Length: 268
Image (cartoon, rainbow, N blue to C red; front, side):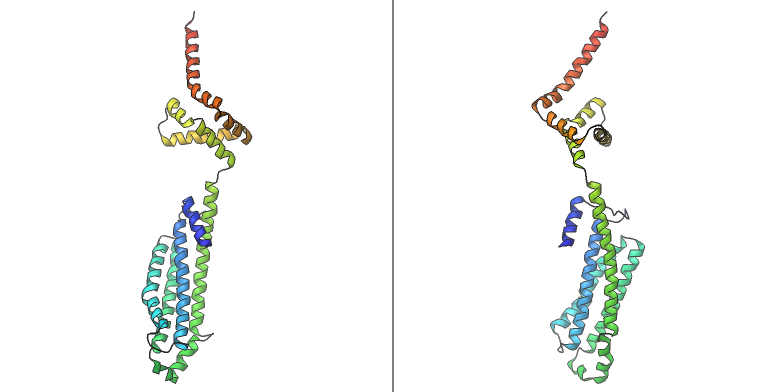
């Protein structure tokens, strides 16, 4: 549930870069996290299936055996292929970590597969030499449980790293996109005053980038010269009937003033 909420935040804020590494795509990080979790669960499942195969299920084509074949021949390849593609878009050190865990996981699956194949036929359980050779590998301190734990720990470390990247993305982008209530009100005031239209009409700036820069400078100027309460007072005034009339009449008042000044200059 927590991961799902993180994904919603990522999509909502259109996160693009990590605080620690601008080239790390947050969506990519979340996809990587998801596949690592799937790989971890798959490794745990294959180990348990092997244990069940040897110690519990002793018949051919049981659900345990069929599921293990699916993991080895289909699911593992599907997950690791996607994980490799995701890793290829990240740092070289991260690619090496993913390659290492994939190789080790595949090695473990092969070892488990050999064990299961040795017990594919029920009669093999009567083979004392075979049982004596294989069963210790599956016991608590056997090579298979140790290898399984080592790989799960390796995956867990990578998951922690990816999770940190996701957390950094969220904190960085939330702070980057956050605007104080005062700045929001200043932008609202500028919109009420139709500043962009006036800039384009009087200053004749046609470039959207230049208008945006002019607007940004104006926001900073308002922020510097007016308190938040004063900004609110201005909003209240300019949204009133009198304020709206002033906005509409201002261009004509300025024009009349210019004409009057020009006429006075012409007087002897």
